[in-house]
Length: 215
Image 1 (cartoon, rainbow, N blue to C red):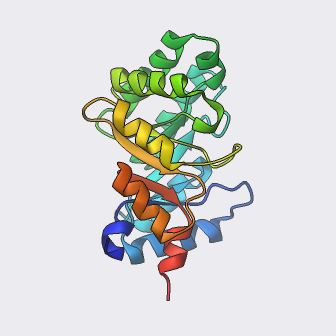
Image 2 (tube, rainbow, N blue to C red):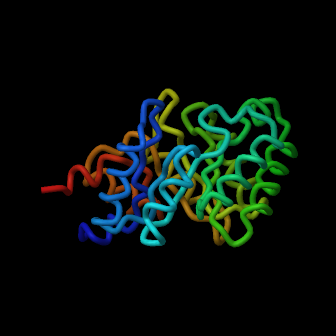
């Protein structure tokens, strides 16, 4: 895969707690230079980044991050504010506890509510695969499809592990038509990135790919 083609699939990401505006600005500069799909950044920097890139880069941010167990109303507020501030893509974390307890209606309703706010904008659903059983992952493939989200995403990058080849293979076999796949967390080599794409990933959440491509 050509570097330009790979970059176009990358959500160039900085979400660490210590990130400053200088870090975010540098991320935006790299993203614009290399032509990534978006920058994925903390909500507090969305407005400033949106004003900085002036339409030259898509702004993505995270909702209910990283634990997912804020209330649905809180996630709705976060989503509306992020969109008002210039975010065009939203990566939400599901309520993992509700899933584990079997409250599937809650999980699906929450995704539906956030997608209704997003409208034509992109909603990605982070299910934190490292905390789920295989059956729960399959269940989430079905719920994400039914709820009308645009992407299912593996990981926050803040739990016990990130994306695996096995999870992307499972997603590809179980999501419905129209649902895309994002691999995120721990993608550290160009070879791994390309293999995730071969297995079915449409988007890659990482900060390392651009670093590897820089001269």
